[in-house]
Amino acid sequence: MLLPDRFEIGRPDNMHVHLRDDERLSLVAPFTCRQFGRAVIMPNDPEILTAGSLAAYERRIRRVTDNFDFRPLMTLKLTHRTTPREVELARELGAVGCKLYPRGVTHGSDDGIDDVRALDEVFRAMAGCGLVCQIHAEQADSFVLDREFDFLPSVLGVLERHPDLKVVLEHVSTAVGAEFVASGPDNIFATVTPVHLTCTLDDIIGHGLRPHNFMCPVPKRSSDRDALIAEVCKPGQRKFGVGTDSAPHDRSQKERPRGCAGVFSEPVALSVYAAVFERWGAADTKVADLERFCSRNGADFYGLPYNEGTITLARDEWVVPTVYRSSRAHWGKENPLDEARGGVEIVPFLAGEVVTWRASSPASSEV
Ligand code: DOR
Ligand code: ZN
Image 1 (cartoon, rainbow, N blue to C red):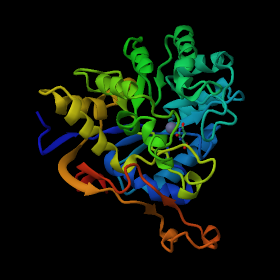
Image 2 (image 1 turned 90 degrees about the vertical axis):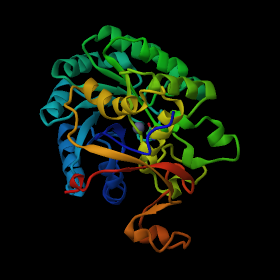
Image 3 (image 1 turned 60 degrees about the vertical axis):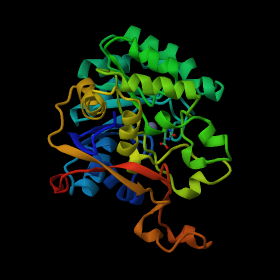
Image 4 (image 1 turned 45 degrees about the vertical axis):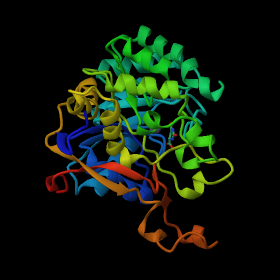
């Protein structure tokens, strides 16, 4: 049974997104705000290490999103210099969590964590004041396909030593990771990206190099993708929720010898999730299960009320633009002077392809 041609779900949340700063922030933020009532904002680029910089970044985000009915949910990045007092201050300023990046595992993680146990005091403070720990669960020095698997013992250690700490296994990418979360205690949750629900490693390196599909963790085997789909679409499933991990980089940073990891998935995120549920969801509960995944599970885990309002999903094919440009980039970038001219060009996930679903908010979400 297909999804209805047009239906509403409660206004969704995106529990993992990179909004960046400056010109990139202005270019990408509207894609988040049009679809989501709230989003958990990652702290790696720009790097947010103190409560003060968190508050200043939140103000910059609010400045470019105040036309929308949208609330950024701020996070602090953990380093070995983070103190219990700093996380408590961040909480007082409204932060919802702290992000743990293992050192060197991805973009903006050079000062990340190489000894998870050393954070135990910080974890205690986080649990004490109700901050969630978002974990990029990859072992930096392992073979790329084994990185998530190899980091799971570290996540397990955190859960065992801190049963009161809420932990999110971000962008889960393997069958084992999904099973770890599904069978884990109530204080573990996972976000799932549109990329990991639709791609495998073949979509990055199997048919020519496609740098705009490259992200960390890399999409893996079809058996991993299928296991993620099965968990996400399971009727009544409450441990998995939307986290697009939309991570825009300028095209020049993606198309170079050592290109950055990160996929700008935000423009197509809800379209992709809807298509996955249409194809793989349980016949009679598809809409309810999609709504739970997009609009309920994340809020429940973070202890937030559901958003007011709804979003409409309509079966309406559209072609994904091949590139999104900031206003200063409209002259194109072929010219060698372009670097000096500035401007941003970002290639979205599924650029140039046809997607089936269009998400639209009532006009009231743009105030
Ligand atoms: O692919 C990724 N890009 N993974 C991350 O963890 C970080 C992100 C980014 O900030 O570009
Ligand atoms: Zn991310």
